[in-house]
Image 1 (cartoon, rainbow, N blue to C red):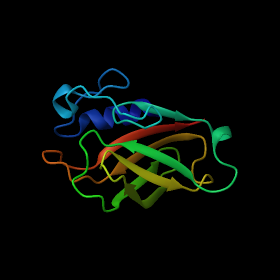
Image 2 (image 1 turned 90 degrees about the vertical axis):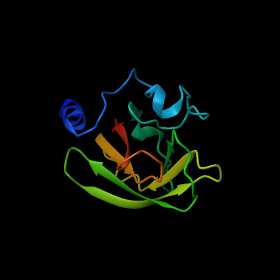
Image 3 (image 1 turned 30 degrees about the vertical axis):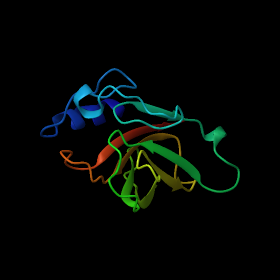
Image 4 (image 1 turned 180 degrees about the vertical axis):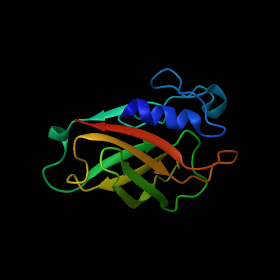
Length: 137
């Protein structure tokens, strides 16, 4: 299933091939890494274990924004389940510095499988949503 996603992603007009896991193209982020090791980064598959989900309350997904958001207003986001086609629409809270967006997700939504997370950005020169891939085990 992940292979199918990679094929579709690479087939998008103007899309670039993913870099080494955990890295982004130099011209996008100047070679920087996220300042928080727990952050989910674009261009890599981030694994989550259901057994690590909180017993009460939502799962918080911390998404690193390689180019800090210009505004800290909530950003529209979508979580696409690749296994069954469900789509959860949400608002991602942007940190005060604009480097991170946080999505709160009901743990029942995140069943084992692959998810594509998209967040709309206001980055200059970046068209379309910023995308992240999560594998829940």
